[in-house]
Amino acid sequence: MATTPEDLNATPDTSDGGAQDFTHSALPALTRQQRTRTFAVCVAAAFLTLLDVSIVTVALPSMEHQLAMSSAEETWSVAGYTLTFGLALIPGGRLGDEFGRRRVFLVGMTLFTITGVLCGLASSAAWLVAARLARGAAAGLVAPQVVGLIHQMYRPDERGRAFGYYGAAVSLSTAIGPLWGGAILQGFGTAEGWRWIFFLFIPFDLAVLPLAHRLLPESRRATRPSGLDLVGAFTLGIAVAAFMLPLLQTGPWGTRRWWLTWIGFVLLAVFVLWERTVIRRGQRPLVDVGLFRERAYWVGVLVAGALYGGFTGIFIVLAQFLQQGMGYSPFKASLCTVLFTIGSAVCGVISGRLVHRAGRLLVIVGTALTAIGLALTAQLVGGVRPGDNIMAIVGFPLLVAGCGAGLVIAANQTLALHAVPRREGSTAAGVYQTGMKIGTSLGTALASSFYFSQLMATHRDFPAAARSGLLCAAALAAFAFLVALPGLTLGARKPLAPRAMGVADVTGAATSSPDV
Image (cartoon, rainbow, N blue to C red; front, side, top):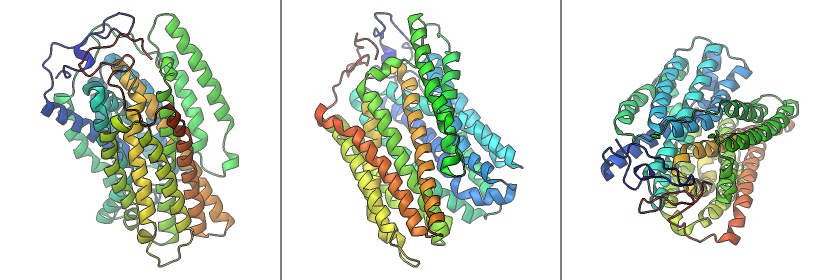
């Protein structure tokens, strides 16, 4: 299938100084119904890959018992998925931009399905960890294609609504994972129930594959692809790994290998210099560093990283506190975060509909609500006692935090990618989502560290420990607010213009502005 007439792929892109870039414009255009079905396939794939981040957390005790996992292996079964997911995002985005988003999407979903089977069949801890690493890399191939395809199929004035539904799916996948995992363990038993967490993915994966093959539009350039910048991919991969590894390590905060972080900074500087060299040679870089000349883009990446670090950290802390400190079952513990999920999903859809009128104000208000909701949750949790109704106590502040997160997710992504050329959509999305993954790792590590440190210092005062971890999450959300706040001086309520640098306007004609 082809893209819509308003898609840049149906018109020449002259944003490269006049060089035209055509794709399969001769194919029939997508009807509104076909585009809706295609969007549903994209959102389903995004939901499945992101769900796998959180659903496994409730199964850790079961996996540890059945496979005799060490604490390091237990951590890597979850953190390893996040690490390879993050490492694959930017190269995966560039592969999609160069060789076709549909093609890379199908390869990634196929590998995601195969690795799910391998995870469910694991007979040892080493097998499970290796399969989880491979599964994360497969998810990293799929995720940037989803955002790139949404960017490709919708006009700038329509993307806010599309990203609203996408943001709702992201919020649901993050929050519903522990709930779904707890239900599976309760239904299949704690002994072998963890295997069914992986096996029950397979029918959904298999349903997505034929639909994706039939519905997703082509996006490959008609001109010969320039190939992947392997040196840049390797350098950036090592840099991202160096940043994330200290965050994913277990043990005391002070004993982690923080020297790797400095190596990450050095390698990141080397990567930027190399990408500039590639551009001067007239070749296509892995990441066009010119993207970061656009303020809305780099601010959006920072806001996303900080916000995801904040609200993903609360799930780790609350799961530990409710199960260890309050004696809740995994399923009952996950029910306590339902209001956060509902608020995030509903406000995500609303945000997508309002972003083109409200602009940056949605991000500013949303980050503030998230920080306030998390801080209030922390204060209330610190005073609970055995037998208290936790859901009634923290329900409202979690709903406020969820509504705030929902307002930010769709609006921030729409604002960040608004000025990105469609042909760079997957790569830009890969960079954006890498920032999210680093933020998620940072938030999880910080919140967990504060929780366990306080638990030891207070001789297992669980409410105090949970309060400490949740305040850390609130601080990250507050940082996101401070990053977004200068938007008030730059026209926070200013609606998004239908035209942007290098982006097809609402009539489908490409601008002649240089790429950002």
